[in-house]
Length: 62
Image 1: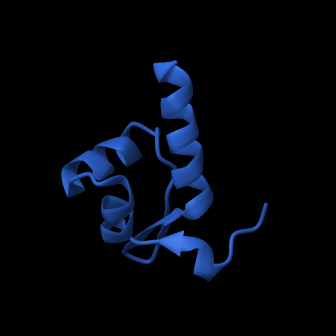
Image 2: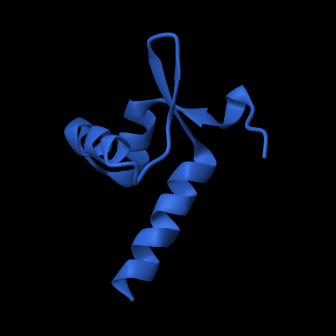
């Protein structure tokens, strides 16, 4: 699947969507539970990765 720039979120945008702090979002990225890419020095998270993270969390909680 190809992701366009319109489908990439910044860390603050992901923080707002998931209602999590900056450290927690970076911990999720470091632990590879949340997929991200780096463009230059900018970290971007595909919207699909956020959706997949939520689905996985719901499945684990069930």
